[in-house]
Amino acid sequence: MSSQIHHIHQQLMNKEITCTSLVQEKLDGLKQNTNNTVNTLLDTMALDLAAKVDAKIANGETIGLLEGIPFGIKDVYMLQGTYTTASSDLLKNYKSAYTATAIQKLLDAGAIPLVKENCDSFGHGSSSENTIFGAVKNAINPDLVGGGSSGGSAVNVAKDYTVFSIGGDTGGSVRQPAGYNNVYGLKPTYGRISRYGLMAYASSTDCVGPIAKSIEDIRIVLNVMSGKDIKDQTSYACAEISQEAISSSETIKTVGYFKNFIETDAIDTKIKSDFLETIEKIKAKGIQVKALDFFESETLVSTYYTLAMAETASNLSRLDGTNYGNRIESDNLKETYAVTRSENFSEETKRRIVGGNQVLSQGFSDEIYLKGLALRDNISENFENDFNEVDIIISPVTPSTPPKIGDSLKNPHAMYLSDAYTVGFSLGQLPTLTIPQGTTTGLQITAAKHNDELVLKFANFLKDTI
Ligand code: GLN
Image 1: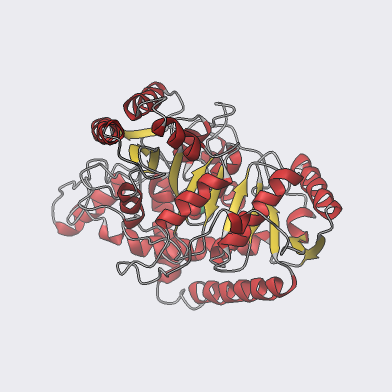
Image 2: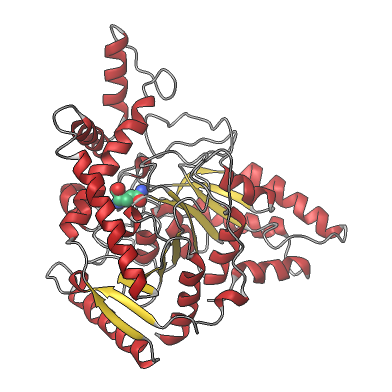
């Protein structure tokens, strides 16, 4: 698929369509959708902005590339004056007091927000069933989950309800739903896009990530959102990625893959054979492919969940019904906190808060939390060594195809294990892109830190190769 952003831009400039009709059409699609992708529709705001774009065009003024392009926002981003619920009971009446930096940059470029999108509550999940708005249904087969946690965002893009959507990826939440719904989803290098205004899940791996139907649209949106922000000290300044820079793949000579991801009984046989076939096609183009050693999936998943639970327990401690959230009064302040949090957090979120506080507590933290941190350092070192040997690492996105709606809720441990291929790259803070090719649930392309350009370059190469 070629760039929808360029196409719509041309249509608007040539007056083939009006921005109002475009926005109205997308809003109608969202309103009628039966995939449960919508938490809040931003219809009034979107139509007001569209009218302004139309007035500019009618005036003969030129418009920017993103001006008038409709997009969706996972319901964990602040957009001033709109509900930001994190798909939770606790925040179902919470209205953002300010706007996230990444979203503000898109608004400044003229893009039009249509919708706050359904997701797993606070990003906790891999299926978008942990939500008060009803399970998100897969765009290809509605009996299956939409993936998670940015399920609503991936389904909206796949169904053309939005041109692009902004998801959030802590351990795979952009890449996995992109894979389940056959679209592109990028987790940039940690810090490339400011996290200011993204509700914190695990701050050390949280990333803002675009989902779209083409590499070019991912590139455009990534460029607009990237850069240093004084409101997020982990953000950094970076150069724009040009269309030319990612059009030729000459610099990519060696690609690696993790042997143990493939040589295991846990992988679906079709995903395995498709992946191996992809490797052959890459080799046929003269690129050297190396099998690499990596940590066991169990180790990756345990390390990730230990740290993610610790961080989320800490981040969510502010949601006590006093500063934020639906307060449920009880006999005294302590009871009020307890009842508010017990009644308003989901089972999955409570599991993580309890687990996180356990690993951080005195007597356990050395054994568990510090061990998790040490393992994370080992994982990062492993990546550094790998990228001395190979330019790119490819991997399947998931070991299995999307589960039926209802199945993940019965078995949280199986759901955690389904993140086996995505969480390692999150711990390494590396740039990773899901492309809708290579296996039924896509392929991940990863490069060394800050090398997001190389990821997009290799994606362009694979588009014509596999
Ligand atoms: N499924 C993973 C988790 O539940 C990742 C979620 C995410 O990236 N927000 O932690």
